[in-house]
Length: 161
Image (cartoon, rainbow, N blue to C red; front, side, top):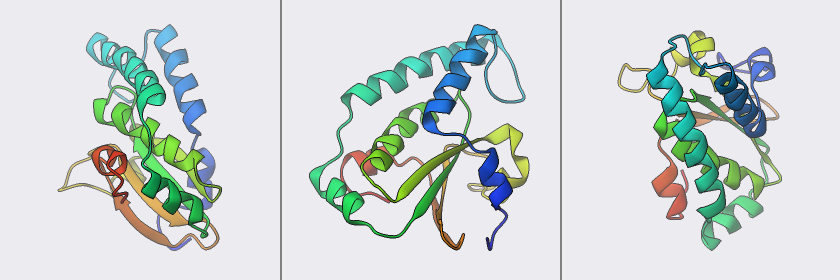
């Protein structure tokens, strides 16, 4: 791969389902993802599980975007840096997951931001560690296609990335 995101980094990533299972397991232990632990962050995580579940049930992808996703041919990896306490992550991941479910060539992988500072520090947004951060790669050669954040509104309205 021609970037800091190597095969070993991708091997540390988890699926959307594994991400949800991780959040529930941590909550059962009174914890959340990330380096900082607090009652407030745990409560945000609990709220975010409900947000994600609601979006999984209610979001629909437009016909135009569905056509783009089903017609796309290059194998891609969408790597998302995330934390369970982040409301923006909870609002975006279910939509990204739904989009990748429509495609046979796009794979969604998630990395916990605080566990991967070497990655996050290479994808800062205006100097900050804003999440979610989407990094898109061609799967066959590792070539980075681009990055993005806060895709919910554009994706839901059919504009994509």
